[in-house]
Length: 396
Image (cartoon, rainbow, N blue to C red):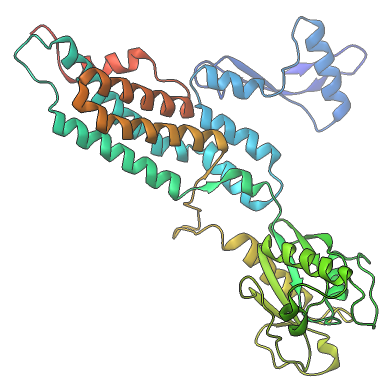
């Protein structure tokens, strides 16, 4: 079409019309495709608003898609998570939500629970009749089966909130092992003071380092040796504080990197767990005999290899992959995990309450169903009634 706005010359634009319900939001949608010019887009927007339109609120298109049933709540959360993602793991996790992976696992269980609840409630309504809609033993089996699947889903999932935190890499080693120099080389600027005098680093110093699939926090702690570890407490107060700070950093580390100068043996430090990677520093001073990664902060040799290994340790190990390369461990946020835990708890109670009567059993099933319904949106009473009339006909 030909578009003319105020004082601007007429320009050719493409107008795409998406009729309800085939659009992304389920409503009638019109898209203007303009030449790539910010000024033209601003003029068009001003013109449309002057004719009575308004700008969309933040997240409004996704909300409209939710309200019209084009997406469920978990997919909407996936859109928000994708927008705020800062590294590959977050993006992969949000993509799973957007593709409905959580819904695909929860909806069949909702369907199964709704069917069980429908049969149970119909049985309550016809207690005076000589008919059994659902045997207690079968009802227990169905509830237990759903409960076990929910427990498996919860146990095999990751915490989405943990993906928001940058992985922590801690450099450990003897004094003057080259940790501070290595930190500066990875960071790309002079973050730590470097000196030939051993013991220059007293506090834990950290820097943000960008790797292939995201950023990590690399922490340089004070140099440790076997004697200091064996002493435990005592000695100068500053040394004791230094050891405590170093130990705290190591405990919270996602990856521990042991830095060993070329020509020296790996020190036997009393670490909370073995180092994940051994890095031979100062490789330009001689041949390395280490089986780890050899680097030279002075020449830059081996730094790319080290970054690749850190990227693998920080971002590849936490997510196992299927044959097609996609991650099969779902990342669930706090809301998902809370609702799943409450549903599991309600189903656990239902297995005990059935002996007290079908009404108590149905009450617990309804609570579990409501919890799962809140994950994807809502499960209404009509959904349960639909199960009744789709499976059998009352009155015949």
